[in-house]
Image (cartoon, rainbow, N blue to C red; front, side, top):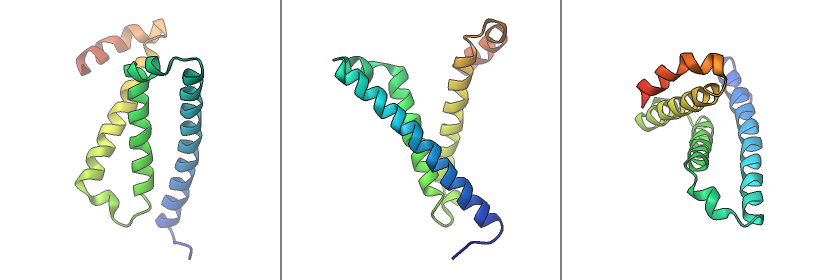
Length: 115
C-alpha cells in the first residue's frame, strides 16, 4: 500500500522526523548516561534546562508518532500540544541566540516580553 499525493509526502516527512528524533533521543540518553557514570545524576535531573529538553523531546515524539494516525491533526489535544511544542522550541532557539552579542541585544526585549 502506497499512499498517493499529500499522504505520501506526509508519511515520508513523518518517517524522516522520527529518524531525526531517534538520533536526538540517543544523544540525550548518552548525555544522561554520562552524567550517571560521573555520579552526577541528581545534578542532571535537578537542572531545569535538562528537564525542559526532556519535556520537548517527549512532546516531539508524541507529535511525530500521532501523525501516523488518521485525523489525529484535527483533535484539540494534538493542536494544543503542537502549539506548546512550537512555542517551546522557538523559546529555546531564542535563548540560544541570546549568547551571540550582536543578535542577543535585539532578541533580549522579545524574550523578556515572552516571560
